Length: 322
Figure 1 (spheres, rainbow, N blue to C red):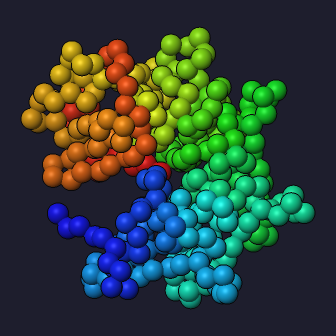
Figure 2 (tube, helix red, strand yellow):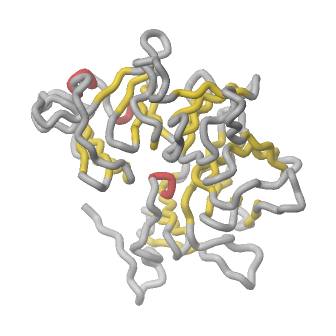
């Protein structure tokens, strides 16, 4: 395993050891370059061919620079575009070929501007439309030609509005549906947006449907490319399965008395997809000698629902997430 750390004496090292606190701060572009968002030291770009890091920092004297050194989300766009979300200074568009930075920020005098400067998540869909999940402003849609935004916010009196104004992560399924995940929501941890109708379907653990999501605090959604089954990672450590052709949601949870439950350590050797929980830290997904870490998933012991062994036969490469 290779370890990368900040070296104060080396300008070509990682700019900080304080990496962003969500999976959205790591991404790989089509050139196999790794982009890393830091908490206070800007954006880092790693070129494996040269084993060098390039730092992109906010410069208050240079408008053509990153708008904020606290980076909380990154997404690869079409062409040479990289989208970067910050904690307090809005959205950045970075043209990797020209080196040009474009900033999108909230303006109280412009109702068509971005409505919140804390950008939790970014997704460019199959049609090239950019969707932006914010901390308090719900879901924003960018019209890149007009540089204007449409806003989709929670309305407690409208059941077809988004479930929460805090959009932690985004996922577009193979049918074109846009899923919004909410960690802080009293009403709905997961919403499905119909782009054509402009309406949402909310999934809530408070509903009377026992086959809805098991939590109102959802961190991420992954999709099995072969079966189109969705796997929903809840903030409290449980995992839900959604198959549109059968029962909407089934639940997996850890059982300390069952070694074959989620997080157990006696899964059959032939299983290709394994999940481990690190108490208080997050979820580790294993495939052979490859490990993937999903942070900020709290660890609670819950009654078992289904065995993890039912995931046998799938590999990590079959799953895609936001």
